Length: 298
Length: 327
Image 1 (cartoon, chains in turn green, brown):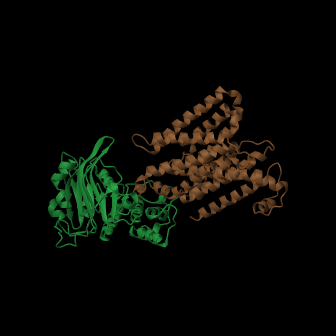
Image 2: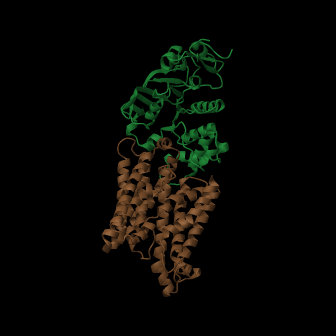
Image 3: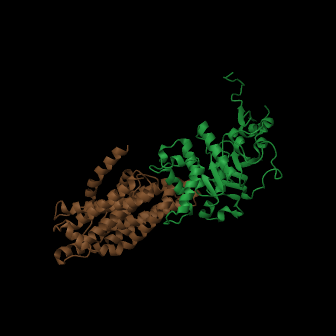
């Protein structure tokens, strides 16, 4: 099945909030265009004298899921860290709701975006509820006690991330998928309008990946803006409203999956003979794994 | 969760028992009931009351403050550096304080009153050098850099101390008590000079409890929550340096306490949450040093032994027992 044809078919379990895939969901037929939460232009980052990002652009809107994809070492994680204010920039502009990231205090930034790392350290003896409570501490002064409203916020974050039923378990007893949902709950406890996650599914099995993906889609449905770094292109095509392709430190394409993940681009950026398809809500990446064209299964 | 209040209550009970024992026992034994009466201001005067108020109470208070300071210094350093081996030794304080004290003992034996000041000054100087090196150049403020700079500074000051002892072997015996670590019955005088350093260290440590919990979830989560991980580590280092240098000024080198007490309370409480570990390390450290000091001065009375070895005697079996259970 052709790439474009496949991706323009009907939707499956991972429904997106804004218009069907492959059909232009312009402002006339969809909901009102949400306000820009983040605008990043010409972001450059050097680490130990080596240029990692050489000019990347990114924008985020409320109620949209944006996936950053690209080969290893392309600068995907560096880009999301830079826009999050976690990585110093050499040049470029990152504006959160119109304000330059470098001029904002950490506490202000914490109210605008939550950053969920790929895998956080797991301290011993800390329960899920305690970890999520730490997530709400950005709003607290050093010696202030938690109020009823804080406890409600913590319960709400656990509910939204579907971790309430194991809230009293310690982090060390959780599976990879459960731990990832706890990390998302910690981010949600910040009550910021943007959730940024660096490869949240890269270490998860298929079922856990589906769980995290549908959770993130639900959060977008609630009006959150979600920015993901993701390696799995089929997953990105299934859940993202916008896909940003990063290659050699630059953003080389931004748009709907069917527009930016063409067979030509997969070849140019990933050096892969591959194409994406979508059929009845399922996406797949068809890859010629062996260059000689042989295949071991009939 | 339910274990923590029990462990905390047990620590408070142990502290109360150690304090009463410390006040009641010695060359003159005073009944516990009378000790409590004197503490509550219902004493009947006489020599017992005088012994307790002017000799044993200052010493017991010193033991509690120094024990709490070292326990808390260890707890916040282990949290800030995410390293179970962290203690005031690794930020150079112990090495610097040791050198400062030995310098006074050996080169200025006539000005022994300057010993706490020398220990405090060189303890803080060593920590400042560690932070200056760890926070310069690439990768500034990383855990590895702090620990390596600390070990380098510890080696430097320890070499200085050993050099002084080798150059003046006839004066070395008077330095032994300081190196082994011990309290003296010298009234409130030392605390009156040193207390501001303890006060700043304790307040800073209390303010660091929540930031350290954020740091326990990793630098990225802490940064997401608006904290600056390197700043938390620097503040924890400063608080620990103040507490450990002030402790060394009063009681010599008791590094073991700062290393072991946080581990003991973490294993006993079953959690590494700083809201529990920091205060519990304070109470546990105070109880251990008060008990150790009582043992050190009563076991072979009227000879006073240095408290360091006694604390090790009390702490190591408990530590090893908990370690065996934990693994």
